[in-house]
Image (tube, rainbow over all chains, first blue to last red; front, side, top):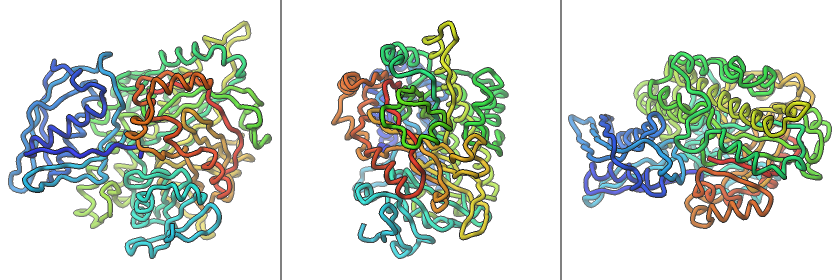
Length: 132
Length: 482
């Protein structure tokens, strides 16, 4: 009730992860297109399972928002599995929070509640619940 | 409801037969009306809590309970620290989200004509919303110091009075904070937000005591409530990005180690846990205590700003208004407490998630001034409805001296945003005598009073259940929200 649940979808894991991050900004901002691409940031993550990798990926954007004051939108995401372990490389671009960014709500964290990444009929989907 | 046993009018028990993996029964403190309005996830989440290793007697849900993640919001559970676990999901991401109440010698007749000036000044001086910064910006060393000292750091640096510490839970500084257990990411995420309100259901509210709203005159007097029309300030905020990152870090760590190191499994990953006295359990405990202290510091800094604003506006020949902290309570913590269980004094690790400690008269950690009255408890209403001041009572022992923390949501944020318009809400509140300033009108819509339970019903249930006794009620006249 106090939280927001959403489902992201993509034809590939890369698309799914991009879609999930974009959902964060659709939830947080009245107009996600108000984020201009002025700075570029790259980060790399890994996990034993894809849903925890997705959790870490979404959490990264919340970290940048609070730690650096940076609203970062994913440009390229590469999710691969190597020898049973999952890796994600992301290049994002964005800008510092400014008066032209009108916020609907702030997101405190991604929760583990009902967290799920799955593939059905060739389409990837992920469910996550956010603490706001 | 048919699977629950009614113990009395405001207490229902979920027996162990509700689900085969439950180690103890669950207990829900609620009237029949409140119980019937609880969403079904509350019951499954309560049952999940009942499966945690080392849980003592019952998992609890308070009258304002609603579905959360891991524990229900309004949930509590006491663990045997030697055999039991600590679970970040039993505390929440906003570690030590809590509320404090400060009373003044101002009257509503003095404040109401100037409420716009007061609220606008508060809105301009207390950082709120996203990216607003904090009242203080701390270097690494000073941040470590603040993690250990909590509110004491504020007093040492000129942001309050010594006596504020006497009227804060744990003296505003919980022992066992270990900055070495804090990640670089949590430091980076939290450093720039110390002394900020946040957003969502966080607020700084100007309130007054309306006619007929003092219910226990003796306790009210001891708490500093002098009479009808008295103005108070209530602050609801937590540990901000710092606490959120601590919780995120340790949730991920516990999920990794839970099975492989401790052979533990839980029905909901949000309940990921570790034995309390394990290395992982103690690392989280040390980090959590840092976040508890940062939240105390956060609320102390905000209160100091409120004092400055009111002094500026109301200072006359005699100086500014008298202002006194009644108490500051935590909502989201795990604390080591000694309590009587089945006639024996024993240590307990009490998880409270969206629930408030409510110690009785005579208990050791109740301030000297309140030894006869019991610990003050503050239960906040929605921004359109009153809030309550209550006192802990001896019968609260049955619930590990725990009570509700707020109204509890009945409507999801998405639904509230569709149903209410933030600007219209601001206008209608102004017409009803509540002036509100906000960083987000969308956020304001989510906080509409109709999205919450009836606070009077919640308070009535806590009183009839023997969790606390109502002392006074405070009606809002002004509010700032992030």
